[in-house]
Image (cartoon, rainbow, N blue to C red):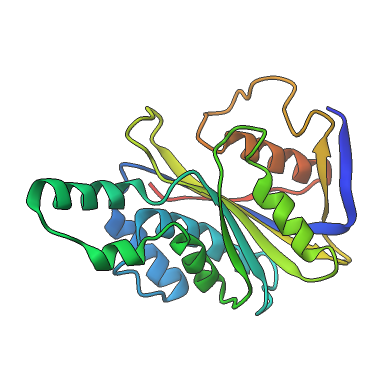
Length: 229
């Protein structure tokens, strides 16, 4: 596949992937995140847990600056939270205002930033896994660091009932401008589309996972992976 460097001054200094499954209980996710980052997990949605558990691994791979920006791509706010709220309101006439406030669409990126220990800018980008849109978080992050700085870019997914695949997880990279070490950010000439379908087990962000693995492998590097099932 033909690859082209997008910006030679911006490099990937860390790449991690966190995998879990819809059958893994929320209690296990909360306990793991609390042990990992010391975060109060009581009101965190499953999507926030998934995002934060992935982001927190970046600290083991590189130094995270206090002003590191955080960009997160996700197709929807936590489906399980909103399904529960809808059931309580429509079937039990019980409102859940605090859960609603705690799980607005941008909450997962706040919790990811908390896991990283950064106070930089944060942004949730509503994207799906279509190749025409899924790289928008990366593009925005690269624009933010082109004059210097650091940004964590992630893609998170919580299982949706409408999809048969129950794989969940988040994928994260760190971008740095002017870094002496790291992997150049490269995309292929076909807009990051792979030449053939992936032979690996599919999950929502498989195209992102394949791209990151290919970019890292090109420089003899691996993506750190963690599975909680």
